[in-house]
Image (cartoon, rainbow, N blue to C red; front, side):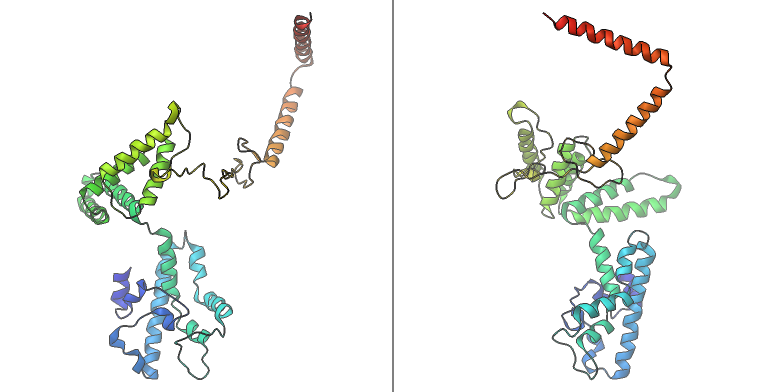
Length: 329
């Protein structure tokens, strides 16, 4: 994205990765030294403003084309017309420093005129999709493994895919041992055991971008196995967070009591919480299912011949009398 943006707006390209702060002059953006903005005349400032606006709209257009299907709410949020109105309400006549004192200009007007809405949208979408640390390493490893599938019908595409995936995977890990350890964690995540999968995910998340060795991982795996099988009985759903003794499913609150785990009704599209943890349905869905079941049973009973129903009823009465007779002294 930066390479494409820089080819069209080279003096603005570095701004795409800068932090944005509405309380700072120019939203905290820096300008290329070649622009010498503080000494601009009105004509030069207007030309830069036009380029800046073109850059923001170009970014928003590209993001809308590529992410509009899945992230339409983010694209809409950074539409400049709507964003300006939101900022006016939030920052109108706010006492902000470092804004130029020009006749007719308020801090809010200055801030919304030079509004980096394209940069803001880019940062928001990037924050949603970016992976960090071990999670990123596992993602890159999966991409590399997938790219290795040989396609003789299109060698050029295959070579390009492998080179791209390998570069990402190689640059994510710090050394061969870190690479091997990430592969081992990935194997645990691919297993059929939910306890171990939960443990591996918690371990990878807590480990972050810190490198780790095969020996370290093996030690934690052995300790976790002992915890899971403590006392000779298998503990269910107790994958501890990175082997540090904090259970994901049996955490404790500040007063030392176990926190209640909220469980949702299994009925599709129902978001109600069940009253008791071993119930599958909320009260409303359970009642609805019971009424439907009763109605279905009644309908089915109507289709049974009267003689058959009478015989069945007689057999039940006879059986009941027999049981009662056996219990009498």
